[in-house]
Structure formats: C-alpha cells, structure tokens
Image (tube, rainbow, N blue to C red; front, side):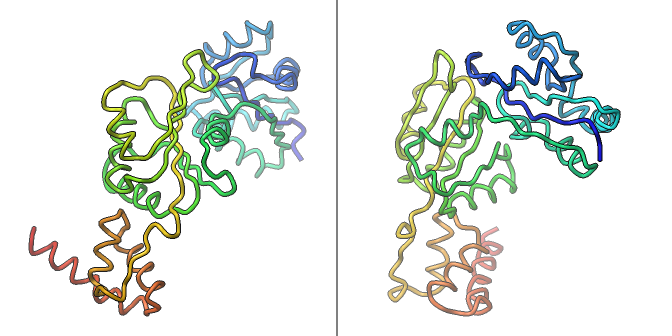
Length: 285
C-alpha cells in the first residue's frame, strides 16, 4: 500500500468564492500541487496566501509526470491534483494519474467542488434523471458524424462542452438533425457575463447567427422523446422506413436496429433492404 495520498481538488470555474474550505485546507497541507498551468494556479494560490510547491501536469507531459507523481506518492508525499478550472479528470488532465494511482494501491480522495457540467445541467431546465456527458465533440470528419448520430437517437439528456469558435457549427449540425429538440446554452458560469439561452435547435441555430458567443460554453441537449420518431410503418415499405430514420440523423446501423425492433423483424432481413441504399449511393457516386 502506497503511503502518499492523491487528492482531487476542484478549483473555481470563474468566481474565486466558489472554492471550498476543504480544498483550501488540502492545498495548504499537501506536499505538492500538480496543476495544469503553474502560472494560473500560482495566481490562485497567491490570492489565498498558499505557498505549497507546484509541478506542472498537462496533456503534453502527463505520461512522464504520472510516473514522477507515483514515485512521490510512494515516498509518502501527499499530492493535490488541480486543473485550470473545475474538477480534474473531466475534459481536463487527471484521468491518467488517477487511474495509475488506484492501480498502484494509493488512496485517491475526491473533494466536492465546482463543475461546469453539473452547474449547467441543473439550470438547463431539461431532465436530470438520466444524462450522458460527451465532453468536446470531434471537430470534423466521420468521427464527428457518428457522434452526432448517436446524440440524435440518445434518449438521455446530453451535455457537451463547446468552443465559442465552433458553437455555431454545432448548433447548425443539431438543427439539421433535430430542429425541434430543446437545447440550453449555458455560457460563462459563475462569471460576470454568465448567460443562459433556451430554445429549440432550429430556432437557436438561426438566432445565434446574429451574434458571436464568447467564453466557456456548455451545451445541453434534450433526450429524444420516444414518440419523436413514431412512424406509421404499416403504410410504408421497410426501405422507406430506413430512409426516414437516416434522414433524421440515424446511422444505417442504428436505423436497421430500430426498424427491426419496431416492425418485429430479424435484423438480417432489414439489413438486406439496407443494402439497396448502399447500392444507390454507389451508383450516384
């Protein structure tokens, strides 16, 4: 059993008053603070008059630093892990060292605190009973298309982080797939210019063209209503049923699964119909 303890310490995402008393106590008492940016964390420590030594731990050095931090834990040194803002390991460095510390037998202690994910979710006005966190979407390509297709058919509330430089593209992608789906754009949580924008995907994609959103953005997407894709399949062929779902954002695989379920058909039978779609695409190409 490793003697040193690794503390996961959330830091403010905007308002410095959001740091907890317990986090401050650990930051003072730890032997070392592993942080994403020593300059940014240095300012935080200076504000609270904390002089614990810092070591950088970020996406470019986390493999090397993980080994170093494990050695220090093995020496019995307590380490506080922080990111620039929010909870380490949530779309920020930290996951690797946490997993390694647990595997090595070190005690890992999570401290409650600031999280843009949870703050945005609870103020979204959307269901919090079941939700999925997607982090940042892929910027482009097939991987992005597949992730958007998954979100389209997801019945849980979906939370993503988005850059102000890509939010309009994401809104337009969502609008093309689910124009009537409810969204919430939560911007600059806990900061002076905090803003909450609510509406349907199509409406917000058009509305946001008129302005440039800035700062940290969390986008919350309502889950697909089970009645949303109701189709009277008794009036249409299997192939048309597949096309309708794919037009709504389903991947071919998802559409086959859904059509087979609704029509109570073997997937293999539906797949044979789906081959026609591929053949037509190849002909057109």
